[in-house]
Every structure is written in structure tokens, then in C-alpha cells.
Image (cartoon, rainbow, N blue to C red; front, top):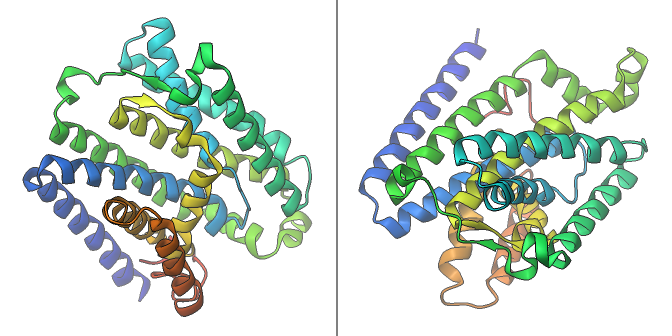
Length: 314
């Protein structure tokens, strides 16, 4: 019975957060609206990573490749085929998800967590190198530029609400997933893989499903990011970007559903504001991470406990 009031509080918190975000979008100046748009996109990216890290106990070290795949697939479809954005968006997600399944299948050929992490990292490096060197196709180090948004989304405020709508829908889907019986098996995978194997669950297939879901939402974030920046750039797919997503999960709390969102807000806002005054702002961010790891076990919202079936708490 105590579970119902807790869930009611969580729903109330979510509704309140949506209202606040909507009001902020109406009254913030354009530069802050754009920053908040970036926070929402990176929060979705970090939450997609947390499906693997926080809920399933997997170790993906190159998650930014799916952010990059979404962005580059979308921009290349626009530039190379002249396809309307309304069609390019879903097709980019189909391409990215298919690539995610192939990469996931190859990474999960080994049952060892460290080997999985290293293979994941290797694919990230391979894709990053390919994007940087294939100048005639991807634009190389310059990236793909000059992508314009549809006229209805050209305004910063309208685009913010477009991103907010995707953010809410994606979070609703992820919330449903992590509160489903499927999530119980994911927790079992994190806690005791051998027990699941004993129960007859195909571990590799189950991990591939988790991997694909996680990669899909990262690709959604990638498409939205390319629309925000009006292009696709090699920085999307670097190891630094992958590490950034892990930082967001660590700071906010990887064992809490909303932890990566808090972490994303801190990293994006802190990085944007402090980079104006301090060139080596990453050093200060490192101090924040140390404080969260040492002083706040499990991150700001983690409270030192692991995510439960109810979505990991608030």
C-alpha cells in the first residue's frame, strides 16, 4: 500500500516538472531556451545509457557512437537524397537501430563484461575514425553543416517545445519499460546473471534487446541534437562524449531514473557557463565527480541504493 503514494508523488513530480519546463520555454530569453533544449537532449542521451548501466549492469564504453549514428544518418539522408525531414527522421532511426543491433550482436559474442566494454569502445573508435577520414561522404573534421530546420521549427521557442514533446514521450516509454516485468529480468541480469541462466533465459538475446533499446533512444537524441546544431559533427561521436554521458549518470545517480537528467543539467549548464571564464573547466567538473563518487555514494539521487522495479525512485 505504501507503494501507491510513492508512485503518486513521482507522477506529481513529473507533471510539475513538465509544467515548469513549459513555463520556462515561454519566458526565457532565446539563448537560455537554446541551452535548456540542449539539456533536454543530453538528458535523453544519458538516460538511454543508463538503461544499460544502471538497470542491466552492462559496461558500454562507446555509447556516443549511437548519438553520432542518429545525427549523421539524419543529415546524410537530407544532404545526399534531398529527402524531406519528416521522412528522414524515422528512416534515420531505422538505420541507426539496425546498426545498433549488428554492433550489439558482435559485442555480445563474448560473455565477459570487460571484453564487451572493450569491443564497444573499439567500435566507437572505428566509427569516429571513419567519420573523420571519409571527407567526401561525411565532411571529415568539418562535419555536415547547413542543415536547416522546417520553417515551423525555425523559431527557438517552437523548436524547444518540439524537443520537449519528444523528451516527454521518450521518457514515458522508458519509464514504462523500467517499471515492467522486463525490468525485473534486467535487474536480475545486473545482480546475478548465473541465476537467470539457470532459469533458462537466453542472456545474450536479452542483453541484445536492452542494447538495442538503449541505442535507439541515443539515436533519437542524436537526430534532435543535429537539428539543434543544424548539422552533424565529429564531436558527437568522440570518446569524450561517451565519457560525458557516464559522468552524467555518475553525478546524478545511475540507480535512479531521474539521476541522469540531473547529471545532464549539471554537466551541460556547468560546462557552458564556466567555459566562458575558464578554458580548462573539465578539471572543475572532475572535482564535482569526485565529490559525488566519494561524498554522495550513488550520485545526487542515488542515496547509495540500487534501482528498484519502480523505476529507481526519484
